[in-house]
Image 1 (cartoon, one colour):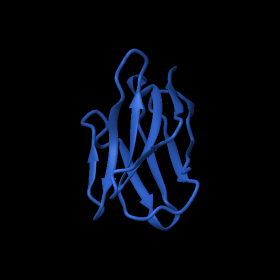
Image 2: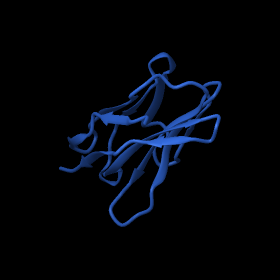
Image 3: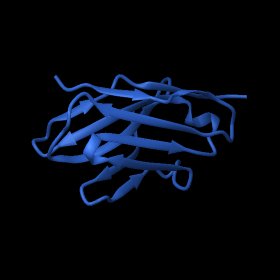
Amino acid sequence: QVQLVESGGGSVQPGGSLRLSCGASEKLFSVTAMGWYRQAPGKERELVARVISGGVTNYADSVKGRFTISRDNAKSMVYLQMNSLKPEDTAVYYCNIRRASSVEYWGKGTLVTVSS
């Protein structure tokens, strides 16, 4: 059973930065997309950033220019650099990896709190 483990969450003041990391418990092949989603209290889970085959990236409008997604295919790792954090970025962040067989994996989430 493949497991995804996130790290890097925590508490930060507005304007601060955090870097999230996500790794798979085993090397994954035929990966079509790696991404980060988030869910704030009382809200639905939403896409934050995603990188698909070929290196194309997608970002939620709310994080464009502030967040950067990157990946290490050899290590089956995906990262999210978050700068200029705002209180509205507070949420549980989940890692997601999809494979060509339409199988997808989710991490258990890491909490990001932005507050003064």
